[in-house]
Image (spheres, rainbow, N blue to C red):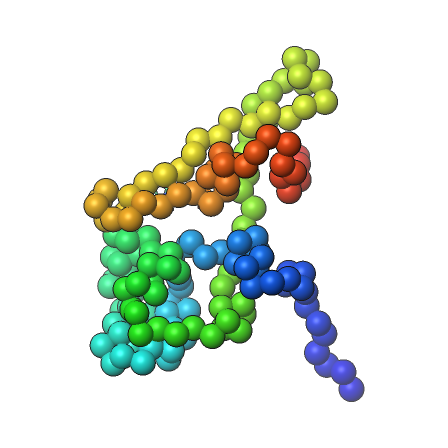
Length: 155
Ligand SMILES: Cc1cc2nc3c(=O)[nH]c(=O)nc-3n(C[C@H](O)[C@H](O)[C@H](O)COP(=O)(O)OP(=O)(O)OC[C@H]3O[C@@H](n4cnc5c(N)ncnc54)[C@H](O)[C@@H]3O)c2cc1C
């Protein structure tokens, strides 16, 4: 009897497309993901550091709040980490939609929807850390006029 069904998390695509379009590589990792990452570190102190973050809630919250680390910064902080592509594809959360209020009037701009968007840009660690850019607002800020933006209207 067939008990498993294929669940298409996202379409068949290259790793580059998966990382740039479908997976969330900028949000700080969850404690359970850190626990999995600890198994992939070859250096003992990196393994221990990741396990401590995964097991100690206070330490994890402080670290997350101070650094807001993305995947790249985790690889830099624990350089002995070697993460197989399959692990990344199965464990990273899906990129979530961002909501924007319609800031235009149908009476003034019939057939158009305008949004007013603040571009998110900040440095972690009280302004001393690396520059972090908001995923959606920065992408919208960068794309050329005429680019198709995947979106839906929520009533
Ligand atoms: C109903 C609704 C309507 C909205 N309408 C609008 C709108 O009209 N216009 C608009 O601009 N936005 C609006 N937003 C917010 C918008 O949806 C996005 O959250 C925002 O644009 C950021 O998305 P991003 O992908 O650029 O940033 P992300 O990649 O999601 O990064 C944002 C995250 O970075 C962190 N962060 C940001 N600044 C700092 C900082 N200084 N220090 C530490 N951490 C920080 C926070 O954790 C924040 O959640 C709305 C949200 C909701 C829920």
